[in-house]
Figure 1 (cartoon, rainbow, N blue to C red):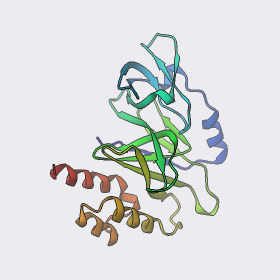
Figure 2 (cartoon, rainbow, N blue to C red):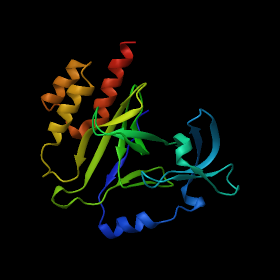
Figure 3 (tube, one colour):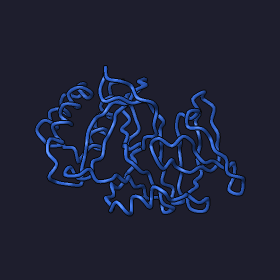
Length: 222
């Protein structure tokens, strides 16, 4: 299922406010499931991680139960359903820049597209509103503007590798070059898709569509 996320550029002051904001039960808990690394599943109400390196997740067995903390190190993934029926996933995954590079400790990734290849979004702050809108908030990166990083993990792989970068600033260069290189390496099974990326028929602004096309192609090969 495709999960849409809005990339929100805010002033540093606003980011600082969001970063320190406490999620209150009445506005931050959603029905959902916690899947643990040992395969067990726990159903109840949970709050989305606010930061990639959050070391715990807030959980309630039911709407009126006492809040408890579950260590992130014990969790594989989260699924949350908002009041309007929107479904959001987070996965706790080890990652690296590219195959052969140093594998870094697990962090929380927002799942943008789930399938044979899962596309993850990495931002400074994750925020899901009661209305079911998801925001990824990053601090500005100087002359580079605000950058957003995407990672990719294929079925049966443990490591997510950096796949693409986007920015709300139109002046950032070489973003398509990063995508082209990654597509040639990770999406090579679908030669037509790689060709469209090379010709800029699909660009770094079409990442979810690209992975949907790739997943459909791989599903047909089964």
